Length: 100
Image (cartoon, rainbow, N blue to C red; front, top):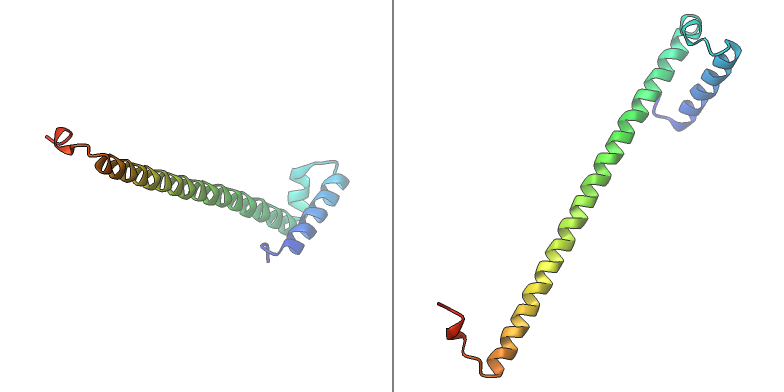
């Protein structure tokens, strides 16, 4: 019920109309329209939770992307090192000096 975007919009519209008619006296609106106040509070709460969830999802996606970039960089480094050692071996470099 409160998750439907059309219902959310309807509640928001009714809330703003009632608040304007009551000269923005929220306490009076809550006393006169308890169901509307409850629905409005639920929608605000749900939207706050959705915002937190979206931030967490974006952070997780950003972390996955950073890990992927790091993995790619490490692979490229390994490939570059392998290519370097292959060229050094072809050039006749003695690796026994590097290994102790």
